Image (tube, rainbow, N blue to C red):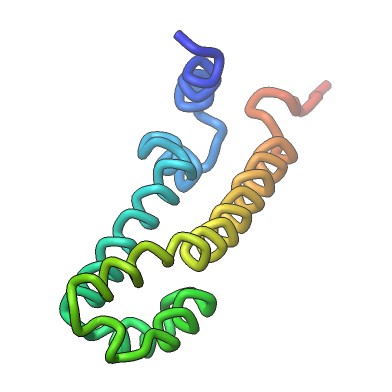
Length: 132
């Protein structure tokens, strides 16, 4: 068993980490969530380009700004043929990677803050009331 898997198993066995952090760890961690979101976004972009409708994704404010800008810049005539679609789909890596790296960085910061907050909470049994 790798060291990372053992560390995750220890965290999941410990009752102190907050439930949201435990849920993320059970789901495979932030890396798995980022990869899944990246795959989903790439599938949506591919479908939009194949259907010659990238503007619909570009208009969605929930999409990363870099991706929306890149989708809005696709000329309509560029995706009217399969060759044009393939050429456009060969390019999204830079925009998607930049956007997803930003999501990953923000998620990593949230996890680190979660660990810091968990560590600063009083441990059960650590504080005892002294009575005479």
